[in-house]
Length: 331
Image 1 (cartoon, rainbow, N blue to C red):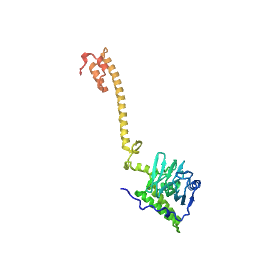
Image 2: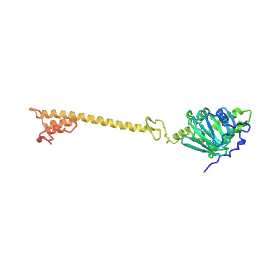
Image 3: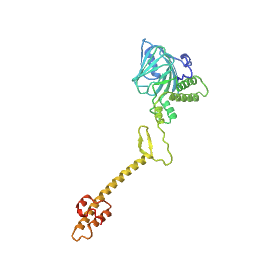
């Protein structure tokens, strides 16, 4: 289901009607005017040698609205990106395109283009495409993003397009036209009203356009939640790489138990080897006494006593030295 914007776009003649337009016919004059208002760029007409540029503009505290129409088909190239301000460009009629690397955005009255800050891009505007433009300083939008998301907005990056036929896109368009009315309407509390209207507009913009902050927050929001209760132990070294969260202390407990079992097994093997060696030495000494001339007592009793004292089976080499007649004798 396609959600339409809250209202149709106004006619170009109805926008910024109280502002004195700036016009230009030559390409050089139009280039110099737009470079002073926005940034340096390369402007080239596509069909004729001249243009019929018409610009109306108003700005207040880092947020502004422009209405720009070149009158002819033109190509606009910006080599280093916008750098320190954001633009949202809405063709009121006709079509335009924007190329950023391998990405191509087809712009219309339902899809706005959002040029990048740090990459070169090229735009082509058809003949007779009056464009409504939102201007926002980078620092101003960053401040709103930090207040809105509670994170550092230094690396805030916006997507290349904004759909106006969605619910959030319609909310942004409504806020834009409301801000236009506030800027056009003079009142005693104008500064306060303009500031609140601008903050609402930028908030609607961040909600409507894809951006790096919402993508990051969306990734964290999709992570499975972990319930933390009093006494829960955490292991800072164990991470679930696919989810990006820390496992609870039970992982540490299992690891500790595994390490303890390995350690106990190693100790047991060491003790067994030591007992085997001690038993071999004790058994050899007992056998020597049993078979020595005048050795007291039965050989079988000495052997069994030594074996019981050591709690081990008689080592094979010692058993081989016991005569066959004495094997199996219990005493």
